[in-house]
Image 1 (cartoon, rainbow, N blue to C red):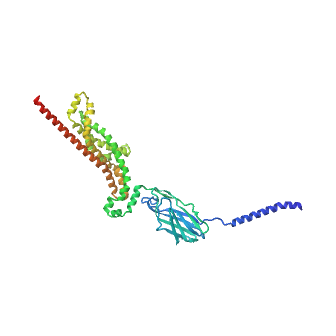
Image 2: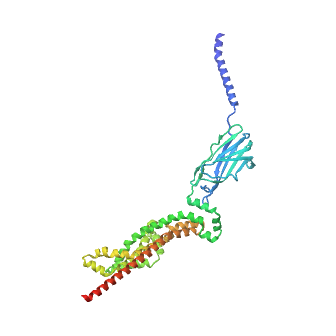
Image 3: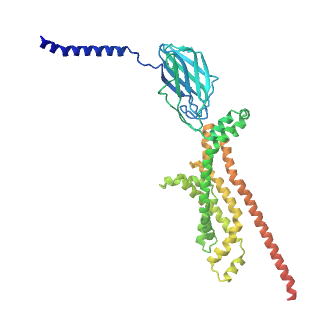
Amino acid sequence: MNLSRHRLLPRALAVCALCAASLIGAAGLALPAPSYAMEIVKCTGRPNSEDDPTVIMGATQSRITLETSIEEGEGVEELTVHIPDGTEFATDDLAVTLLTGDDLMTRNDVGYTETVAGQDLTLTFDEPIRQAGHLSVIVYDVYFPQAGGEMQVEATYSTTEQKDIALEGIPVISVDGISVTESLSQWLEEQPWVQTWNSNRFLRLFFDPTLLVTSFPVVLNGFFMSIAVVALAFPLGIPLALVLAFMRLSKFPLWRGIAAVYVNLVRGTPLFLQIYIAFFGLPMAGINIPNFPLGVIVMMLNSGAYMCEIFRAGILSISKGQNEAARSLGMSKLQTMLYVILPQMFRIVIPNLTNEFITLYKDTSLLAAVGVMELVMYARTIVASTGSITPYIVAALFYLVITLPLSRFTRFLEERTRAGHVRTRKRAHAEDADTTKEAPHA
């Protein structure tokens, strides 16, 4: 009997332990599990880009839509939404709605009191929200920072039982930054005087202030490209022109003939045609050269033919006495040309070279016809997308920035050269007069 009791005791203890565990488990199941009144459904910004309907731009009017789900009987008393730092917003047209029903299509107005403290927008509801549904909060007149970035909206809420519960899982809003000129253009669009100005069709077509601002940085890229073409083509054309000028002045008929044919051919045909032959003819012959270096080569060859005549005329304008005097001093033909003729020639032809530089700079616009991204080509791309001629006006201003100062400089050089010639003649006449007076005494 005692042995049986010893065997039953462990079994009884095991049964008791099992029962205790069952009671504890049942008690644990009976404990209320923590629940959260809200879950994020969506947080989005309204796209506002004219070029891409899916892009949100900074410093441009948008809105924020925050939608959360509420469980039955939770009793949401307050919701605080933290708008991303640097974002401007207004609450005049704030929309707070509770969407209910199986399809969430029933809109229920929610009474609330709003409070704004810095970037925090707090909504205190007149009565706790106990009905299940989706709470939608739409903040209008939102302007995200101009630099853009990942905008993170934060939110906390309070119920009748818990306070300041963080709403987790809110997705970020991706915002593209805009340039200073785009921001300025948007500001101009809102100005009354700009709206009055653009109400005139002619002014809007040719002188739209908003397009003048936004076109400037784009066309500026083409300006640098045009300057780069001229900065390479013009210096490279100078040695070509000198060689052609020497060939034209050569005593050998073959050299004179080759130079004459080249110069007359280039000067006698339009540059536009020469560009087309180079850009479309060479690829057909199996010669493929990138657009930019090919454009430089064409402009160099064309400018060289014109500068050849400038140099030839400049050399011929030097009196033969200069050459004879140098030769009498024992200088060779090459030394005479390098140290006597060419220095005087360059001083004489500088005004004409400046004019040639201006012409070459303006002629770079013809490269737009073959796809070289220079000044006019950049302007053309904006015109094609906006339908306004204003970008061409901006391009014209960039041409004038170079041509007007150079034209004034050319006139200054011409006047200075003319004055130098006058002084030289007066000095020569004075020397002749002195010689005449001294002759009888001799």
